[in-house]
Length: 462
Image 1 (tube, rainbow, N blue to C red):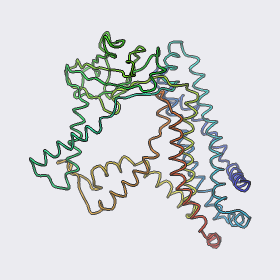
Image 2: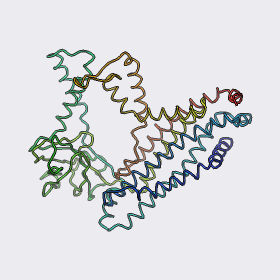
Image 3: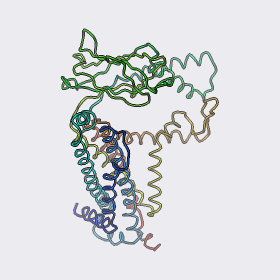
Image 4: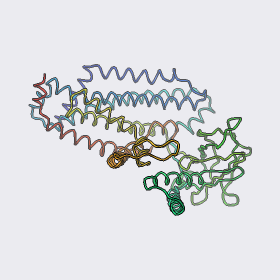
């Protein structure tokens, strides 16, 4: 460990020698202090706080992520190209210790910068919140500066797939469909079935049964929030639609309903409070919506209706969010070092950025996998195109998506800005999947490449 920490110390010295630490610290400070002054909010305390969390944490993640990738590529590749690594390699130290030492040096540097930037953000939020009126402070403490758990209706994905398959088989019996077009037809039928489950026609009602689970044991007497979002089949002259809500079951549980219609805009999230203790003894909360509008409204199965409840304090939740960001930085450090283990600095930086861009393009890959082809479809008929490359690329895309989905579902910035709880289990899952699994794969590959690299070859090219 002494040898590893010695290499980590040399990485720190390099960062200070190139003034990277001071430059990053200055940029992070400007982002934390300057962004809230430059970006306009909607005039509410909630909107201002969400902007602070969203933009400052996004900029912090971006700055630290790019600098980590750049320094990881440069600290190893340049040491080899400038013949400094040849001197270190003659010492009684294994190459895997050099590689790990570089990674620890990078991550300790990131840890200090992330704690400094996160501390500034947290202090700014608390300072601004303390200057607000009591009513606004109450909103912040209940909806933003808090850790809230969430509960949704149980997934009916299995029933949707069963209905989709039944409708597909009926269609195949009554009409001829080319084999290559079956995936596209199945997709269209699935969307139709989902629409039926999500649509609330005029003068109709829709009921959600939401199980609060174990949380019911500590939610007695606590106010909850309903978070809703819908789409409209037609536009409204006023831009909003009337909504009627009731929660609970009369004569069975406590009961609440809106005294007058709530005017809500489509395509955006809305939150409103509901009284405590509206769920039954099993923790089931019954939410019913009535559509008094002349047009149908659609509530997504994924994010249409959700119940939010208090689960913890903001401070610890904020720290767990920074922990997930730290896991992402650890992955980027491993990626950059792996590329620098067998490539020159410019090529390693290009290679790392290319992999990062591919990772950020997972939605495009998912569309190709879902359609079963990388070829462009016919816009008039809506039928996907096909090519010979599908036989190779589609299985490759499926494997790549499997890996990407292990790491892409962790979004601490979104959770913190909406007052969502980041649990210890989520942090542990992020560490195991992002750092240990994917980062470990990069580390093993990088150490193997570095062990097999001929350092004398790099020296001879100078």
